[in-house]
Amino acid sequence: MLSSRQASSAGAGTQSVRASRRRRRWGHETLHGYLFAAPVILGLLIFTAYPIIFTFYLSFTEYKIVDVPRFVGLRNYVAMFSDELFLKSLSATIYYSVLAIPLTLATGFMVAILMNQKVRGIAVYRTIWYLPTLVPAAAAAALWRWILNRDFGLLNNLLGSLGLPTPGWLIEPGLTIPALVLVGLWMGLGGTMLVFLAGLQGLPQQLYEAAEIDGAGTFGQFRHITVPMMSPIIFYNLVLGIIGSFQVFTIVYLIYTPTGTGSAGPEDSGLMYMVFLYRNAFQYFNVGYAAALSWLLFLVIVGLTAVMFRLQRRWVYYETERGR
Amino acid sequence: MATTTAQQGGPLAADMGQGPRTSRRRPSSRIRTVLAYVLLTGGGLVMLLPFAWLVSSSLKGPENIFTVPPEWIPEPMRWRNFTDVLSALPFLRYLENTLVITFVAATGQVVTSVLCAFAFSRLRWPGRDVLFAIVLATLMVPYTVTLIPTFILFKSLNWLDTFLPLTVPYWFGAGSAFFIFLLRQFFRTLPMELDEAARIDGAGPWVILTQIILPLSRPAIAVVSVFAFLSHWNDFFGPLVYLTSESKWTLALGISALQGLQWGRDMTHLVMAVSVIMVAPVVVLFFLAQKTFIRGIVLTGLKA
Image 1 (cartoon, rainbow over the protein chains, first blue to last red):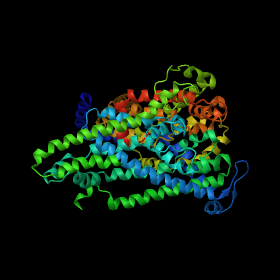
Image 2: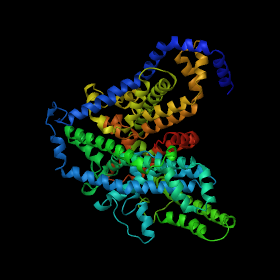
Image 3: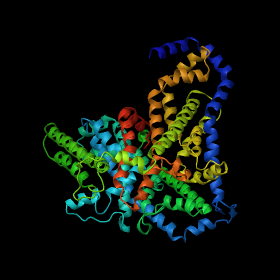
Image 4: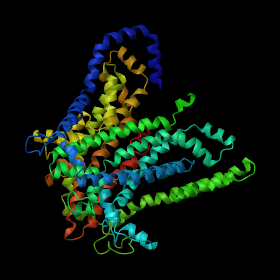
């Protein structure tokens, strides 16, 4: 505090000196700017720009790593749509997204609202709800494989004691995705909740007070203040959710590792997009095909983000737009 | 989901009743608070249940782990599971590998992010803002798009099955876009007059960074360091792709290998013990750095 006051008074007193110094130092500053950013600039070129372009090229080739890439035009992209496993992975990923994203968003939003009710000990609650997010995926997969065990797992123990059916979560193909959604919910809820909570705590209190005076009830306030004011954050979590579910890998891969490397559950029912991609790249060495899959994913993500930004204009409320 | 309607139904019903606002408001908000506590505590216990199951299972043996209903507090507690894992797999070797990779990679991320964020926020140079926009745009790039060429690159450098692919890129800003963003935002909140006063005294950018900016930025750097540590400690995909010989594996690969070994005899209790060992440092770190941690997540919207 003291040093900043000293500094600002010094700065004000030497206005002209400062200006001329800055002019003299300009070249110096540019050099240092590039120097300090140099590692990141190099990294962007080597580890991002070049690989993106090279993957694009590979996606038009047939390449098995041991040989040279052979140009095949659009064949990889065309082949996808008659590849049963590709279609299976696409539908598994979409099924997962449709279940997991609304569930995570709704639950996260609700928990954030509860925590925002001026509850005492909020730090403790926040910690408890956030903790699962930190668990390493490898450990989480091992733990959940054991929780979901049909005969001795925690989940079926609880369900059984309530007199509910105790299905084979990891054995029945129809239950693979719901089981993965459950794991994803446990691991993803904390982050979503925290982002919502931060947003709720930033909402202007006067709006609620005004609504109260106008006689709006709890639900009315929720519907007409909380939801519109929070829509940018809901939107943000939605985009992240979609991008995330297309990249689910470790949990699926690890939960089914004991049944064979690269396994995706009974009848490949848990064949998420990334697992399919990994198989092609690192198990079958269909590198060209895997490159095409990567680029398709890239386009999907860019496209989804663009569509959402467009939709956002229609239904997301921004404070700055109030005057329009 | 039923709980949502229950929670909102209570206060809503109360608010719809008649009578003057003042007399209605208090019981309604009291009901709401009680409901909030009940739901937060109940749900919180459900979130914690898997942890309890993890710890409980890690203290059991093959003879009492498969019981219905489960014994929550095993009798006797089998502490030797934690020493047994040392012989079941080269645990210490995996731990050492994980620590080396995590330490080198996380340090690289913090150092390059600080340098770059400083250049983005405290220095003026042509192309700066364009470059910052590009760095932010890389957040949208899925890692698979860069994976194959990077793999081929490391293969041609003979770096496969070494720690280099898992560490060197992080000295060049790989995976650091969020950190750069966070640090830049933080650096921008510090008054520019500090730099200008130092310049008048003849200080160069390096002195300004190390003597002025860094000492004032400890909380932001702590957040970035914790996140960087976690992302490498938790990483499974990188080691899976790049490390083939068993002696170079990390803990995450060790857990999965141990799971794969389960064919002959059941080792669920040992898998749980290793998982406890992997989760414990993360939980401890979280409790130590809780405040800065939450602030960092809130600032960036980053989900670890």
